[in-house]
Image 1 (cartoon, helix red, strand yellow):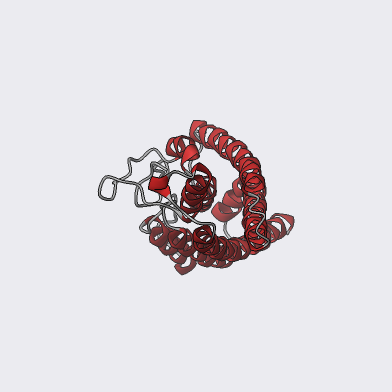
Image 2 (cartoon, helix red, strand yellow; image 1 turned 60 degrees about the vertical axis):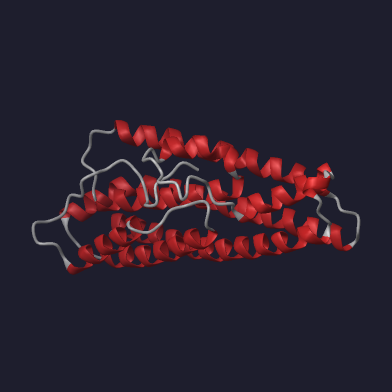
Length: 265
């Protein structure tokens, strides 16, 4: 994916009170921490780290929402619809990770049975990629729609943008290099290449091993057992991402409940 080594999105100003409340500052500090962190689909550990940071961010947002002020209520109204969108996107990402993990486990099982059903894995991968392609396209339309809005952007909108950026990086990691062009449009800042090359992700390592196994070329000689190690590494990475995303999903649900409670008071 063509991305910078920092979370990238269209720059927006944050509208805050003249004297920032400590809880407001806490949210802002969490946002700054995430913005300065690496956002790279070449590292599942970086994405897991960002998901953990996102959980901390929403815990701060939960406290922030308890502030009672006219400005805060106005922010809440504008963020309510966005909370539904974030839940939908996060839910899709959860499904994608679950399907991808099942693909990996099925292939591992077939290798143990010596049936080596690589074709089934490839077919499942295509289905997962199709879902991701649609989701990324939808996110692109949402991003364009938000950019057309003239209304002043507030702190909660920045939280929304950061959340989407992290979920986009997760989806791109799972889909592999073919979806990089879509994500590069969502994150337009140029990426600083590491030694002029893209790192090989766990997903790509499995694809490379399987392609070598299928081709059977002497220069790419590989045995079935050589596929097992990258598959195990991929399964562990997906599990870590699932755990992190699940925590974020719970935070999003709690966040929406708080938003509804505030507006119903």
